[in-house]
Image (tube, rainbow, N blue to C red; front, side):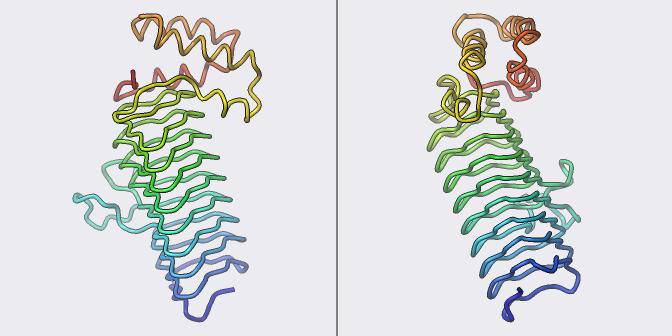
Length: 256
């Protein structure tokens, strides 16, 4: 299952059924779970842990040093979950000691060609990052988020669950859950109603989310006032809790 031209460190831990293609390099302190496939000419350096049933395509660079001038060879890590697709020429860096020292990619993510995920990013599950999407350091991305082609997020931004970042958009503040953003700098354009329909949200739930969005963006309220009203509604409309949490947890301020 390992091509004879591949170079695999004796200090790597590779499950028996892992496939490693021609001319790929697996460095020290790399752990790869069962069912994972790594195609030709990929490089995986450690400390990196890769879970089960992932597919890493040719020419990807996974788990190398963070692109941070303060980095001084500290033993930081990258952790990748299960069933991720990571396409050609993607780069995913390890963490830095200026944060928790770990970059994390969850499960069932679809990472398309030329995507860059910088040091200390935390990516949830079932996200899609289209070609050339770029995350600066320390970005947190919730579940089910979609980044359009050539879009990006500024360092330390939070992008809430179920949100949609349009093609070529560049967000420099936090994007609340459910919100669609486009333009540079990224601006709110409504909620990701089509994505919510595809994920089984009911018409009533989507209507409730739209009404909560209007409280933040259309009613002229202070953000604190909108948060209080959404909190009151969330007791009977639990789908608003994710939206509420993303508003409360914002450090950089939300896009408005």
